[in-house]
Amino acid sequence: QKEVEQDPGPLSVPEGAIVSLNCTYSNSAFQYFMWYRQYSRKGPELLMYTYSSGNKEDGRFTAQVDKSSKYISLFIRDSQPSDSATYLCAMETGGFKTIFGAGTRLFVKA
Amino acid sequence: ETGVTQSPTHLIKTRGQQVTLRCSSQSGHNTVSWYQQALGQGPQFIFQYYREEENGRGNFPPRFSGLQFPNYSSELNVNALELDDSALYLCASSNPTSGGAGGETQYFGPGTRLTVL
Image (tube, rainbow over all chains, first blue to last red; front, side):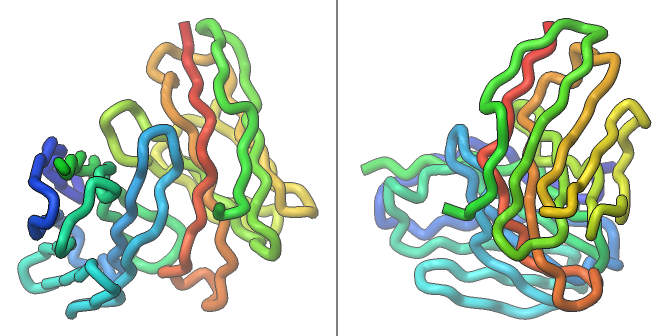
């Protein structure tokens, strides 16, 4: 069993839709939870960062962490074609090693 | 732009050869991590360097080695290349403010695409 599970998709939605992306994990020691966006032929770019449980909002993006269920989510409101990318969840226990999910490919159709 | 640069952009090698990939960290960042990203997968942690010392390592064999220089630029060396080493190699720089306790923002470079034939 992988430490971090993420549905690879692809996920296709119409412009303006609310997108829900999620990951599950098995290691209860994870404390730091991140979402990265990766465009084709580019490196990952940090979108959201959350420490421990709770919600965090930044513009059209909302990250949620439920440590009791070992489940994290990223919501994108009013999705745009420019949001089309691969979204990677990532987690850390604290220290040097970041564990990434496999990434979900998102397509937003105009 | 994140300020992290990598070279070369693309590289083609044959099985058994050796390769060196280079990374220039964002200004002021003293920590660099290297990742391997196979096609359709998330990045996998190879190792991290902090102030020129290896700070931690993932599940990669010893033929994957690295260096960090006084100016905090870095190299990833891979010996005895295998077909499965074909991947995108990413470096990420950060500047820990919490003694390496975790959660520092990492800035990724664009990666080097390595193909092993």
